[in-house]
Image (cartoon, rainbow over all chains, first blue to last red):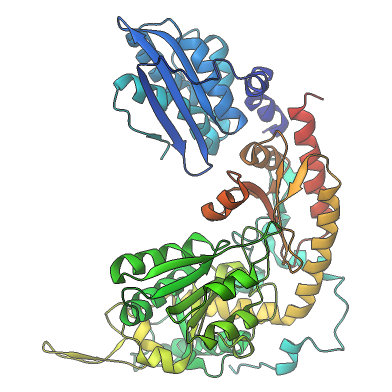
Length: 150
Length: 425
C-alpha cells in the first residue's frame, strides 16, 4: 500500500479548502430546525441549523469545532443540501454514508462530496466525516436529539 | 525456581553503566522490527501500552506449554507448581514496589480494577454523607469515575485540587482542601496526559496529618521510576502490567495489611472464602479475599517476567535514559513553529503532549501514522484536564526504554511534514 498516496486521497485540496474557509459557517437565528452533534472520542462538536419550508431546506448553516475532516464534511454538506427537498436529502444521506463506508458505493454523481471518500482507507476517521450528516439527519427528523458517533 | 531480588538492583548501584546504550534493547522487542504502512514502526504510544520483550512473550507461552494448572486447590504436582509460579510473581511485585510483605499485593485486571476494588470495598464501607474525597485536576477518568460512583452511593463529596498553567499541582490549594472531612485522597503518581510527577510523599504526609487514607495511581510511574510504597507512605498503590512491558489484563493493588484485613470482599466466588455454608460464609485473609475465581495465572507469571526484565535493565538506568530523551524531545518539539507543549512542569516523566496551530490532533495522528509514527491523539481519558487547558485534546508522544533519538527525530520530521501538507507547501 502506498501510504503517501492514501494520505493525499484523504486530505485532498478540497478538504483543506473547506477546513480553512468553511462555507455557511454561522449561527442562524431564523432557523426552524437544529440539532447538536458530538463525537466524545475526539471532542468534535457542531450544531446544524436548518430553515425548512414546504418540505425543502431553504437554508442551512453550522457552527462548531473539529478536525479537518469533520469541518470540511460539514461545510461540503451545507453546500450539497441547500435548496433540496427533504426526500432528496434523505436519499443523499444514505448514499453518502455508503460512499464513506462501502467499498462499492452507489452509482451517483456526488460532486465535490466524493472528496470525503478517502476516509474509507482510514476506518477510525469515518466517524469524523459522518458526524455532520448524522446531525443533519436528526435536525430533519426533528428529534432535536444530540447526534453521537458511537 | 528461586526468586533472586537484590536490594542493590532497586537502588541503582553506583557501578552501573551510564544511561546511554539502551538502544540495543530495541532488539529485545520483536514487534519493533516490523514495519507499518511501509515504514519502520516508530512506537511512541507507550503511555497507552508498552510493547513486550521476547522474555515476557516466551514466559506466557512457556507457562501454557509446561506449567498450566489451576492454583491454590489441586493436590497434583502441576497445580502446586503453577501455584508456586503465581506466588513467586506476587513476591516480584512486592519487591518492585518495596512493600513490606507479599500479602499486601492483590492481583487485579489492572489499575482500573485496583482503584475500583478500593472504591467498592474500602470507600463504600468507610465513607458517609458529608465525607470528602480529594483528587486532582490531572486525574485519569479511572481515578475520577469510581469516586463519583462512591459519592452517589454514600453522599460523600468529591473535591478537586487545581493545577497551574504548567501542569503542576497547586500544593497550597491542595493543602487548603485537606480538612477534618477529608477521608480519602486519590492522586496520580505521574500524569498520563502531561507527564507531571506529583510529590506523592509530601502529599501523603499532609493527607495523613488530617487522618485521610491515600491511594496513589501508579499506572504511569512504575515503568519509569523506582517506586517505594513504604517511603511514599501511601495506603494503596495501583498499577497495570501492560504499561510495564507485561501483558494486558493483569495488574496489582498494593494495600497496607491492616487496611486490607479490615476490608470486606468485593467479589464473591471460589478462592476467596474460608468456609461456605448456606447460612453464612467466612472470608479468606488478604490477598486471597480479593482474588475471587480463577485468576489470570499466565498473566501473573508473565508480569513476573516483565518485572525481571525491567530490573535486569535497571529501573534507574531506564529513568535516566528516558529523562535524557525527554529533554532531547522537548528541545526538538520546541523548535517547531506553532507547536505548544501542554505540561511543562519542572518534574516530568517521559511524556510530550502538544498542540499545533491549525492542525487538529486527530489529523496530526493520522498523518504521523502514515509515516509509521504511532502516537495518541485525543483527550487521553482526562476530559476535565483538557477543559482546564481549554482544548479538545492533544497529540501525545510517550517514551519507553527502547526509544531513542532516532524515534524523536522521526516524530519531529513527521510533524513538519504534516505542517507542510496543511499549509499547502
